[in-house]
Length: 486
Image (cartoon, rainbow, N blue to C red; front, side):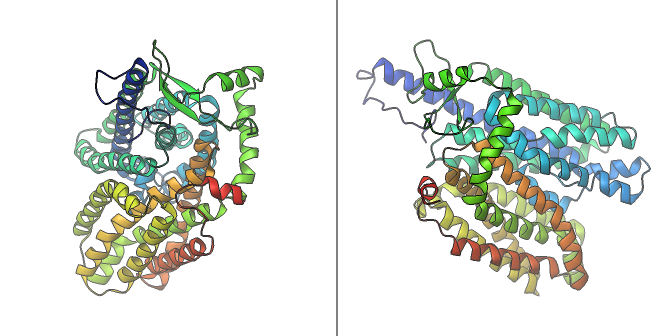
């Protein structure tokens, strides 16, 4: 795996032939590997802390004495949708979802402008502040106030993914993203267990919220330890690019020299000659990104929306449908959901081998995983056997996990040299739109049949497959060729 600044340092055959330059590259690779492992820890702690609190939000807000309608507006905590969204690091909630819809793109672009290091630490610290306020929320006003900093700045996983895309080569990116999803998924599995135990204590919700805040502070502390020895350097980009067309790479500061491939001087001089306020740069970058999004990426974002809604529809009435169709008790269904979540987490390790089998063609992997998801949704909707439900759920955990990784990789590949933070942020905003639409569509489809939501999901997945088939890009694993065609 090539780490550092998208370049492989040539190592000598042995210690005797190792030059100072190659020794520096080797040392940088080791440091980059450690930094990569820290990012995995960030993902684990993030979802571990969040998943301790989220399942308890609905119960807590209702304990404050508000009506169900107000509770739904403030925080619509639904564990079925939470499982569908866990890999994205988000949770359900009307107010929270609306904040995420508008903040995802802005924060992603902000990380491109001011740098991943600063934006990541700020997001972690302000998220910790939100959970601290949540631990003091003794009325609905404080509860709503606590959700604001979390809704606006809870983009730790998105910035981490953008940082990972800067740190590794395009060939290794899907593998690293899959491993990152696996690490964060383990946190999501363990968090509810700890939260469920803590909530049994006196004032259990408040204790859990304070512990969640402590987890985020721990994350920030580890971030300071790992990030202070590192600096942000810009990669080589054409001078004709727009002002924020610079991707931040993380390179260790070494007294004996920088890693190979870190072209810092030209871009440093360029940024020094034209200094603008960060918010001005963000707005300028968003305007320049508009053309890219609507010309080269519209089909990918549409596929992301359709497949996201399809999976959310599958989870939206999962517990109720199994009860009505097969008489399966919610407790047993909970075991099935935990089982499929664990499998989905482990699926991150399969991304690398699968992509090697497909010669790093993320588009084809996404197409085939979406086709498998569509068929499994149809099977789940039409089967009359619990065994087939378990079978379809097992394979769905793999197909959806691999599809999520591939569509993120495809976004970054097609985006080319553009800002990865902005592209990932727009993708999260698209997912937030799906999170708003899914409960509405599920309610309508549920009126027709318990099988209505997953059947509608299969239809949406079929539309996504048709879009991918009709807009097949003229490249295999390299998005730059598609940009030339646009």
